[in-house]
Length: 288
Image (cartoon, rainbow, N blue to C red):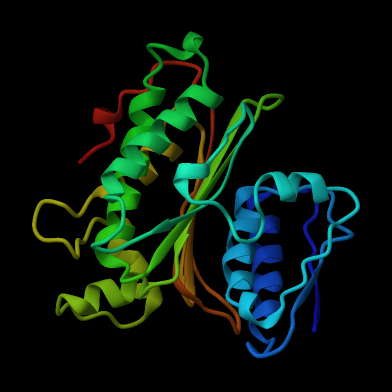
């Protein structure tokens, strides 16, 4: 079955989100025992958010002769970032503008997630942000975000793997990081510890207001990160998709919780996009 992927060059988060949902919906209706062919020939421009969920979804068809044709305009880039299967962390080779798709095993026999996160933080800082950024607080920003989000994935997702991809655009001084899993999602994480959750929308609302599934005192990772990126000089955008619901907060705008139409992501997707800070960002001003 041919799935024609549509990704425009429109940088609007709402536009990119709608395109992602449409592309995922078209993949999900393909029977898993069929060959799936992604047609990216009309795609001119991609971001981590636009292709990492597609890579994860398509990789499930690999045992059924997936064919991913080389698109005319971005085939070289997709090959470079190892779309769709990704790399193990040991084999990663980053550049000043991207860190390719990484597929990170989770579980007792895997490299500890804390170690992987520590090394990934250094990749982001070293490759995307020059020594001129010293004193801006960007190392603490990236470190806090990745540590907290990876902790959620590693401890509560019940997924075998997590995926992450990052991109930096020098001409706009913007960075985008997307990470995801295919586990139980936020609702499943709450229910696993005996908490009552009405639906995916309710689970997201709990997460963004600091209700923890980890125990008292550790419930503010997501909510603090949202404030950090969307209320500071980072002028960021924060997105969560879990199950049949999502959350968006953009700098200078009110947050939105929404339901997905006829589509669900089994697990959690988190994306943050932010600018190089124009002044020092102190993460402790935003941690509750």
